[in-house]
Structures are given as structure tokens and as C-alpha cells.
Image 1: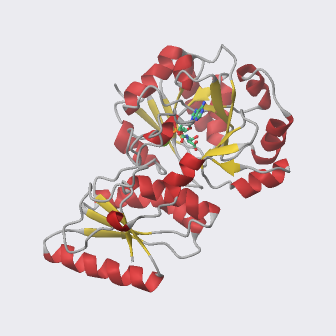
Image 2: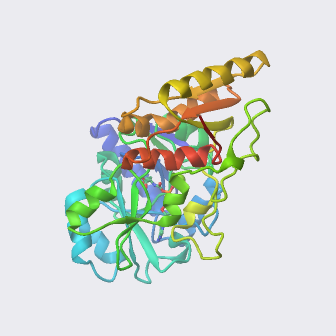
Length: 367
Ligand code: TXA
Ligand code: MG
């Protein structure tokens, strides 16, 4: 496929023409990658099953992993769901456009392929003027997962999308780096208690405050975001760090009890850099010392080591930089990435840890 790349940083006359062209491609069942405030998305007409099917093929995405539907106005939400509850109204008013995805009952017109066969649909209004203009021009809701090859770190820069999807999308719209850097908070509003299925920059505390009631994090997600390693889950530094030596039993699968995962995306390998990755957790000075030790050992043996270490309270910066750092380190050809754990008592720290643990295949050294 011949992919056209449009560079748009402001919506001037040329950009308007390009967005019109991209909207036409979407209406005709094509694929367009576009920026959002969280990460770049790979879009198709959400109501066209063949177009959505093409997303799964382009990304190599398992077809039971449902896709978020992006809208630009509330009237489109009315087309997707049977009823809009007071809670949904409150959250939409307060947080849209923004990095919040709401999981709601769907109407039959939303194709099964979009929702991975689920009776619910995930909807969000992105806070990015290019994305909003594209959706408006298109006149249809846009189904869009993150614009990466399945399993790779989510793309936060236009170049990441070009790396992954050149030849696989009809159009790639390159713009500024994404402001947030991790994907939206996914909130399930179909049960009695609003439940976070994927932590993000919008925290359960913020959501609960807006709703005036408790918002919980799904226990499966918590298990995937906080690691409490037992003695057998330590890595022996003297031996070569081994991908299989320290898999937390929750890794890639919250499904051990046989119950279907609430958010199917939770069960897949995610965000994996090409390099081996290990998380070091402990007091800052100890982590730094251990990193240096492992680095020296590895480099002496001819390896190339990269480090991901954020300021202790720099949670938003960590969210912004994390995926891009993984890709940068891959580009530099490192074969081992040592990452410093963030404090998961902080809600944004937890959201980044959720991605970091998946990227590292749940390998943690407690120091
Ligand atoms: O920030 C974002 O959400 C980005 C941008 C492009 O909007 N999109 C994104 O999409 O991260 P994706 O496909 O990479 O992740 C969607 C997540 C998956 O974990 C999926 O399982 C979950 O949302 N999801 C989608 N529909 C769902 C549903 N009906 N019920 C439960 N979880 C759902
Ligand atoms: Mg994704």
C-alpha cells in the first residue's frame, strides 16, 4: 500500500484540504493514522465492519481486543449507546474532550468487530484539534487503537507511526508529540460501581470527585500495575538476566481463574521494546548504584545498556516520556534496558508502572 504522509501542526488552508482528503479516505473504508493528546491512533469508520477489520490486519492485533470509538460531539454518542446516564453526562461535561474513555452498553448498529464481540462500546472525545476536525469532516465516529504494530510501545511522535505503519495505512498525519504520552483512562460504567479498566493520567480520585462517588480500579488491573514479588521472583544479578526467570503469575493474563478479562486488551503482551527490560525497585540511591553495577558488568561482557530513570515525583513527565524512551533505546541498539520503578501509591505513577511492568514482562529486582 502506498502511504501518504501529511504534516499538520496548525489547521491552515492546506491542512483543511488534507483533512478533507483524509476524511474522504475514511468514509471510503480506508485507514488514517492521526494524533491525539494521549498517543497516535490508527483510525477507520467505526460503523464499517470491513474498515475496522483492516485495522486489526494492519496492526496484527488479536480480533477479540475491542477498539475505542472516537467522537467529536455528544450527539454522536447518542447514536452509539441506548441511553446516556447522569454519570456519563457529568464525566463528559467535565473531562471531554480529554483522556477519558467510557465503556457503555452499545446499540446493535455498532458492529461486533469494533467491540470485539462485546455488548459494550468504549467511547472517547480526544483533546486534539486535528483529531476533532478529522472526525467532524468524516461525519462518522472513528474507531482507533493506538497506531503501533501490536505489542510495540504506543506511538507518541509522528515518526513512531511512520516507523510502524508505513505501507499499512492509507494516510499518516504527523503532528506534534503527544501531550500526555500514555493512553486514556478506560472507565467501565456498565456495572454498579464505576471501575477503571486501564489507568491513565486522569485518576480514580479525579473521576470519583466529579461523580461524587467511589471509583475503583479493577483488581486484575491493580495486580498488573503493582508487583509484590516473592522470593522466587528475584533476579540473580550474577546470572544473566533471564526473561523467564521472573514472570509474575499475573503477567499478560488476568485470566488465570478462567473468568474472561473485562478489558480484553489487558491480557496481551504489550509495549515490548526489542531489548530485554528489567525494573529495579528500592531506595533511589540503591537503585542508581545497582544500575551502575549491572551496566558495568553487562558492558564489560560486550552488551549495551540503556537506563530509564525518572525524577521521583515527576509522574507526568514519566508518562510523557516513557514510550518514546523505549523506542529511542531500541533505535540506539541497546540489548538491556534498566528501568527505575515509580511510586505506585501515586495514581499517575501507577498508570506508568502498569505500562512499565508489561514492557518488562513483569521482571523486577527488589533492592
Ligand atoms: O488514548 C487512547 O485511548 C488511545 C488513543 C488513540 O485514543 N487509544 C488506545 O486504544 O489506546 P487501544 O486499542 O490501544 O486500547 C484500547 C483499550 C484496550 O485495552 C481495550 O481492551 C479496551 O480499551 N477496550 C476497548 N473497548 C472496550 C470495551 N467495550 N470494554 C472493555 N474494554 C475495552
Ligand atoms: Mg494500544
